[in-house]
Length: 248
Length: 277
Image (tube, rainbow over all chains, first blue to last red; front, side, top):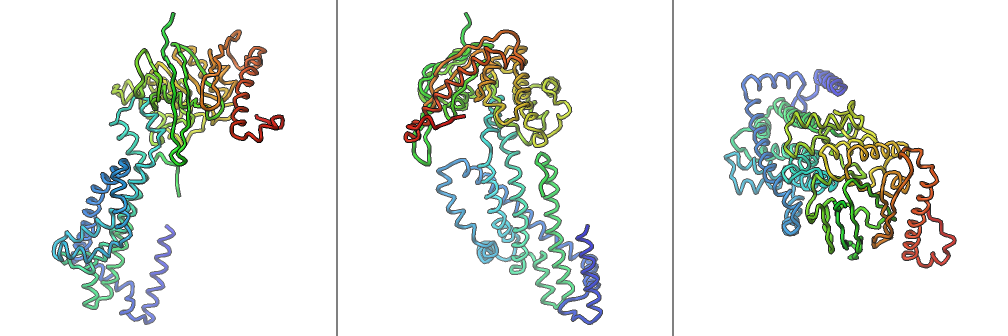
């Protein structure tokens, strides 16, 4: 709530500064940005580009989740595979996701969405992997013993013990992945046009045609969508993790 | 004559300390019989393999040598017939009190209405009806252990194995729960095996106290507990209770001193100086 007051105050000062003669090519006024926003909503371009980016992040993260989950669980449980594969994963992990953009272009070209999925996949795979891997290692032996002494079979241990105790780590992994995936995607869209859609592409377009108000609309939309995705995950987390003491 | 429920013959178990590459013998040639409806306590100095023995009975671990029979069959895996109450409660933090108590019933495929009825019965029994929808983090230590007790009883075990169940609780709570366990034993006729290092607790609750030696754990002595009258908290000041307590305390002290001698031979030369509480 207090955050909204801060934003309103900043916008007010900004608007006054614009009236007082701030160069609109350096920083367009809030009212111009708002008009540009209304226009881009009206002609549908904002929604089209937002949806394109949102969809890419979604697909990339789902792919990363589907692969990281089995890989992380397997490596956490199997020492031999872990010794063979973990060094490879740890070796690739420090490569910044945007450094994979040239590779994405080489492998998937610049036309379809495949390259964008790949970038989001690469960006979100590692945080998901690390968190799931940690989660499996952190299942308390006492919980497994207690469950077995109450007659639980393997199936119940997976559904009632392993998954719920791994969930906090999975959600943390998901939050980090969405953040990193989103940032990397926007960067990739600025370099590669993919289908000629996406907020990163729109960015470049508006900059090329010298349209500073639209560039700002873009910036804020990217921030807003990122913020909303994070807020959504936090809500899901609250619902799913009622059993944990309240944390700050 | 009764046939024993547990027949433990010449059991040994050792562990390898991975980091230091040491081999530690936790149990050596332990033999013991436990009969149905017994209340047996196992006491001994820290690290004497008490918990190892309990985990073998539960089926969490396997012995290196010797045989371990339950109803004349070797113990190969955990079973809800031999359930466990843990020192750290072992409650599932993501389940409410009720869900914790229902877990053992759920995994057996008991219909939901029946799960509910049985769980309510045991939740009432441990006086937690007002807390059935609470999560473990919202409960005190004593309440958590009551959930542990209700959860164990709900799956109708033959044997309840307790691993220092009240060690993390304050004195008063511990005594209250001891009395409740005694009552449960008297009314349910289940078999109880209790690991503890509180001599009072062992005497108060048991028919037999098994005293173990310092590591490697062997059985030092089995003491039969016969006390006159009902076991209420008053019994703890009875001369016979105190005599038993002194006897057991003396035995345990001997073992602790032996451990000290093994670990710090120089110190033990001035044995008179060492005070062990």
